[in-house]
Image 1: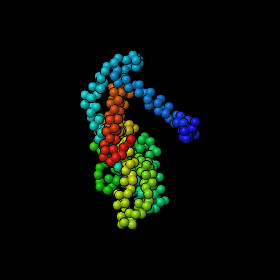
Image 2 (image 1 turned 120 degrees about the vertical axis):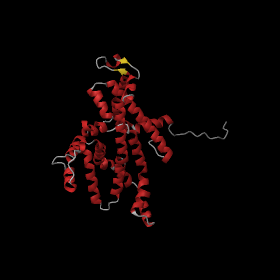
Image 3 (image 1 turned 90 degrees about the vertical axis):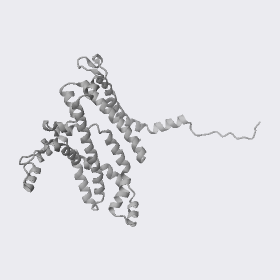
Image 4 (image 1 turned 180 degrees about the vertical axis):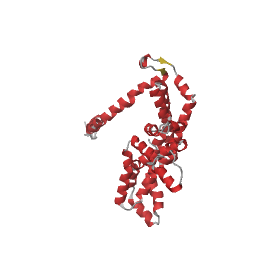
Length: 318
């Protein structure tokens, strides 16, 4: 006997079936991701097994499993070494200069390039600024040694002698000038390529905002400050957080190729210090302990900077 109710049978597929359909549609994307995930696992995660030698007196003859365990011996050794703290100071100072000048240079370059009206000249300037990025540090170091040389080929010294009558200076052997030179070299090499991200962000800003600001009487500087910079803010925050995370590390090639024994006191950084004691002196456990500590500090710094950024400006990496 019917009670007057109507039973409605749903024809919609169940949740498991929906998931299967979505998986089938996205299968091609998963296949494309597979090589990247596999290479990441092989080259980034499997080598983490090697960090255990930081707690051993590692011997290449005994291997990882046969070497003697020494607990925190190597951590104590470098943390109580005055030379290590001198190297750490050099690393932080050069990175601070990179952050102060090298990080802001692409932002300023993108803002200034955005104000150029002539599109053809603008494209040419951007292309020329990208070119140094594709030069290896071997070439860049050779160029700077040649340009700053006190010999007849040194353009800078020739200009100083001709304009001011100053005696030639071998800039690359002056400890007080080395940090400024390597920071300037990095800016010259990377400013154009680093600005690409900011160019892309600027291109996505709604042009009607500039039109409305122009109608309200805002000049080009005011438009850059109140429209362009706020539009670039998410990208600036992202790049700043990534830069902060690498403050305990620095490009090995740049320092190694441009330094010399006369400027070791000001140029020796963690990367070059690890190279000398690790490869040249075969102290693998000590260098692994330094690298592990450096990575942990970078991780903590990244998490802290991300938390502070989200609290201060409401933006972060995640």
